[in-house]
Each structure stands twice: as C-alpha cells, then as structure tokens.
Length: 155
Image (cartoon, rainbow, N blue to C red; front, side, top):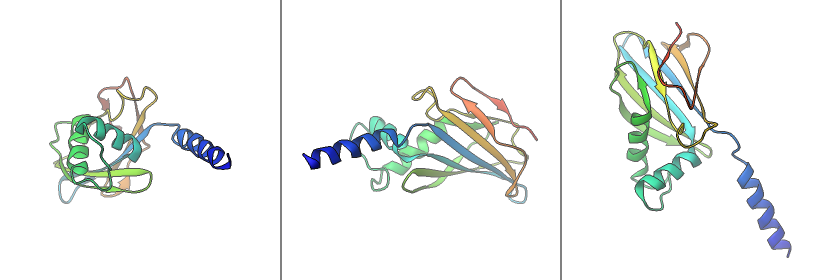
C-alpha cells in the first residue's frame, strides 16, 4: 500500500512538473563573421514527445541517433528570420531543455522573425526571441504567441 501511495504521489508530481510551455531563442548577429547564430531552447520532454510522433516509434532525445536530425528539421520548419537559410550545427540536451544551434549567413541584422515551435501543439505556448549583436543584448525579448506570424524585431 505504501508503495502504491508513493507511486501515485510521484506520478502526480511528474504530471504537474511541466505546467507551462515556453521556447526561447538567443539570436546573435555576428558583425565580424556576417552570420546570424541562433541558440534555440525548447523543453526537452515536449520535443521528445513530438519527435516520437514524427518518427512513429519510441525515441529518447538524449540517446537516439535520429533525435538530432529530427529536432533540427523541426526547428528549421518552425523558425524563420527574414530570408535566412539556416543550417543546424547540433543539439545539446540537459535534464529539462534541448538547445539547438543554427547558423545562417547574414550581411545585416534581421528585421523580422517567426517562431512557431509547438504553437500548434500547445495553445498556451509562449516563445521569445532575444536579439543580440556581437553577444550584447539589443533591447528586450520579443514574445511570440500561438496566433503570431511574422513580427518585426525592434532595433
């Protein structure tokens, strides 16, 4: 009986541990290299669930060799800055987050962005973009809600 109560309590805690849906991009325009460098941080459990659905099989985000290419493909589908063509440099997975690293040539800082990751899956999803130039913040983070499409990036 004690074991069942512990299991029930643990399940309840896990079910409520992830009560919000949030994604964040640090978008750094590197003026010397003329590149736009993105660090895209998403909840690892949400991304893992989505990748399982897309792969049609069980998948562990931190152990499966196909997780990174699938995650990169998803990021490239749901994130856009002007007409930038990103390539995925890799992914780092921690206990709670997966961070994808994307890069594109960019002669000038981006003027607008679209960040739709998980917006179709979670109506309460909030995504933010923090714009940087040469690793220094340039203004406050810009929020993207589920209904948002392209948004201008304030200088």
